[in-house]
Length: 131
Image (cartoon, rainbow, N blue to C red):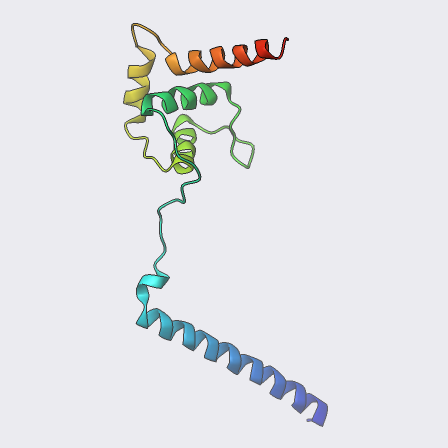
């Protein structure tokens, strides 16, 4: 074996040994502090919903029905997926989705008070602009 090949081989072996030592250090740290290496399934809350669950569900159902929210693949999300997305954003659990949806859609007085208020506020803003 030539001197150049031996030098390259030794350099590669040094790198392998350094990687193994690094992995051993990580394993050692994991054994000493397992809580630091536990994966979390709690999503990071991006914002806070300052309304009721019924309001967010009105919004979620309406957006779902428009078909505007899609997966990155382009496939349309189902209602549970859209609700899950909003749940992650606002750090809330939207449980009993279909039961709540049924209750919302069968309201007697006003079927969509939150959506109505959004429409009102939007029209009011348009009027302020003189359009």
